Image (cartoon, rainbow, N blue to C red):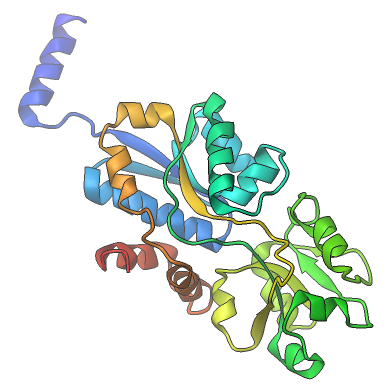
Length: 288
């Protein structure tokens, strides 16, 4: 180090103006993920004072995972069922702890660590219009399978291909489909139900739109869908570089039950409030 550089360093130390640590938080490209990304980023800023770069709304599971592996992001929220089937290419498991243990072990060679879950389980939910459920006497997926008419199904792009998705659902329940499912962005599923473009949507249990009375989720009475506990996945080198990071993130563990996540999604999707604002309120209210 040259004399000039040393003098600049000394001056910076004296002035207390050395650059703050920088960490990059990512998320996938739907409301819940963006909300969680904002909550995680805000927690780091509040507890550690780091500069947080947000790379939210990155895309689907594989894009987010590759960004984490490459170091483009340091951490992001992921779901155990998704990681197990879409990333590790393993068969779904039905027990939550077994799924968490499996993804922790499977991610270890990448030096990626799963922190304790955030508290909610966002498994799939097959959603219909409440009026259709009343008129046709539908409460469970078995009820839906007994309907003589085939269903017009809408689903996200990943659902039709993943091993815990469409094929297994049809096989488990004998669900009849009239044609190929309509693949679309997750945010378009509920508008398509409202417009009757589709009759059933492969949605998620913590969707904010499920708080609206015109929609209902059919019970998975044969327990087909595996657990999808959400947890923060973080690069091991980030935990090594920032010793306080693990403790700061651990404060979010078990702090977000299903009802809280659904309500935050509702505030964004139904009441059209900014995700960053909803996340700040969550953190300022002590995670309630």
